[in-house]
Length: 208
Image (tube, rainbow, N blue to C red):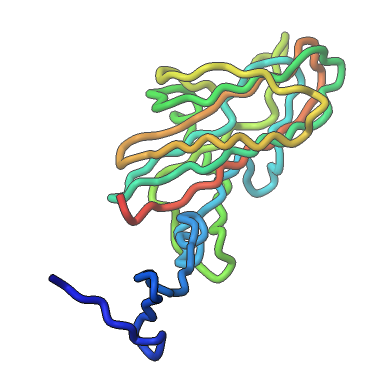
């Protein structure tokens, strides 16, 4: 039978109490924090150079953001932040849909690079996958259309109140190699002008 001996907490020896309990110090590090520390966490945004927000001129659904994992390790999507501007002329709610593994659409065909920022300001590690953002502005009418789509995949639509300008969705999704996530956004009915920004917070899970 193995026997635990009291090292009184000196150097690398563990203290054992009279109740046979180990007395040790522990450090708990959240998975995302640890990934960011080593440069393996990113923010993926529906914005790029010269196009800070999605600009709407109608209540037209668009697909603002898509990203996939082409690396060997799983990507964890911790949360998605939806930042909503004022919807001029709009009544009712915004409509947001998170899409699991979309298979096509103009967002993927056009392949406009999303804005990607490493969450560690001292790291330059590249995101291990592709990430696309919508063209902007999004308009409809006699002048034609300019909006992106995503097809295939699955996911439920949820309403977002106009009175809340920043919505943090704790999505808790995992993307193994070859899998993806996208979203669509629709302004309130009757909107003639609006803006929005989508930002996904992701990190590599090295235990996968």
